[in-house]
Length: 175
Length: 201
Ligand SMILES: Cc1ncc(C[n+]2csc(CCOP(=O)(O)OP(=O)(O)O)c2C)c(N)n1
Image 1 (cartoon, rainbow over the protein chains, first blue to last red):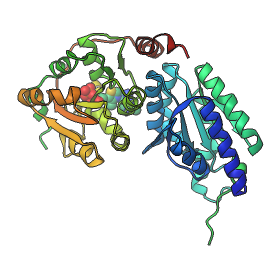
Image 2 (cartoon, rainbow over the protein chains, first blue to last red):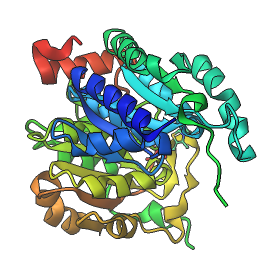
Image 3 (cartoon, protein in one colour):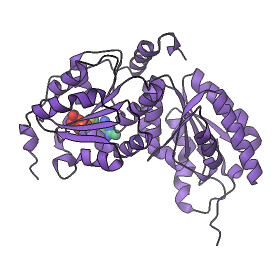
């Protein structure tokens, strides 16, 4: 993935979030969300909320929805495990929850510590009743985020777009 | 550690909550699971209460999202020490956002009341107001008696937030006053009362 590609699809997703009237953007950073987070931080139409753990984001966005705000939660796949019990809140209250998850431990992973969680991320989400939208090509990202957001906010439902490591490029530590 | 000291604290949780909510006006209330939710419901089951039956560790984060969405309303989070200990990181997140309309009140009985009154970390060395203060919340305090409560009530109700008060309350088992437990109902009722016709998504 070139820097230009990365910025192009990140900008595309940002535009979808604007169109969807997303206001609260909660995140624990991942390199794959680098450019999107920057765009959201710069936007006057959004409030960026860095978290200490991803489950805070699930609760935060429930509060946002109570108050009439739409939100999105950005995280890497390992963060999904941190959210599980809090998904009960979303489900039992029938609230929308839009998540953009950058995958690790899924394709060409160099760090074995990422693999256990990465391998069960989608299964866990499905088991928890979260709709999943895996994407393996950057050309499909924008339309998938749009489709997911529609199902989330018109459901209301919880839904996660899973952005494959094939798009992000398997990370390595350069020596 | 004197694990029984909270049996003798002079403040009673229901009187504390009664005092905080008796002048609630247009306030929005989030109540942590278990006893705090019953305490809030004992004052009255209101549409603009969001009493939790789960989501342990999430009460402050829910309050934060609500406070950011509704900057013109006072948002009051009333929760237990056990619930607060599960979400300490959320105090740091609150401090970074610094919502002026958010107040957090912990009813600290130094116990996990709902599960059999086992002691929490606050019965030992942990001081929640210091945690909140060190996290960067500008107005924090610990209240131990009626005079203390009287003097901070105006801050809890109206001081520019975020504010955090840990209120030491007597460890007691009280009659249950249960709010509705269907989460979808609680959410729809809350949004309808707050947002009117815009509540339908
Ligand atoms: C994730 C999770 N862990 C444990 C429990 C069990 N639980 C329910 S209420 C509660 C204690 C709450 O204690 P506290 O917040 O101090 O309230 P109080 O003592 O006022 O009842 C616990 C441990 C739970 N519901 N969820």
